[in-house]
Image (cartoon, rainbow, N blue to C red; front, side):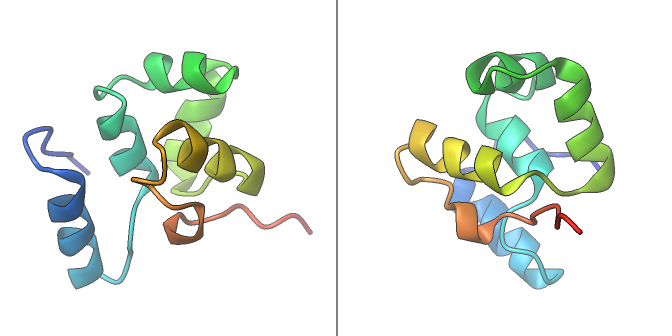
Length: 86
C-alpha cells in the first residue's frame, strides 16, 4: 500500500473510511514524515517493531495511546487497529 504524503490527516481518514478503516499504521508513519525510523524514535522502540506493525497493519494499544499523546489528539488511539493480546 502506498501512502500519499501530500494528503492531510483528514483526507487520509476519509480515504480509509471508504475501505472500512479509520486510520492505518501507514497513516501514522506518514504523519511522522513517512519514515518508520522517525516514528520508532518518537515512541522509543526499534524500527523493526514499527516495520512489524506496518506489515501486520496493527499496533499495540499502549503505542496507539502514545501516538495520540504525541500528535496532541490529531490521531486518536481508538481509531487505530490494535494488536489483540491473547
